[in-house]
Length: 65
Image 1 (cartoon, rainbow, N blue to C red):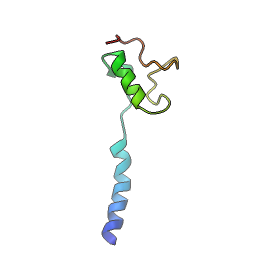
Image 2: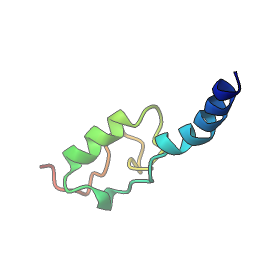
Image 3: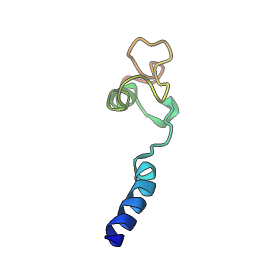
Image 4: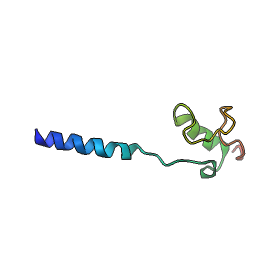
């Protein structure tokens, strides 16, 4: 029982760090297509601020690629 408790405490402390993702900027991508793909996989909203004009297109200044 104590082992299970220790494991659950450890897992809850480590889990957020395991899923943490560094902030991405347009400079982190070579092409707009690459940035768009990441943007669409990043979930709802624009947590990385890749779509400055909120038109659904990420990093419009990058080459299309």
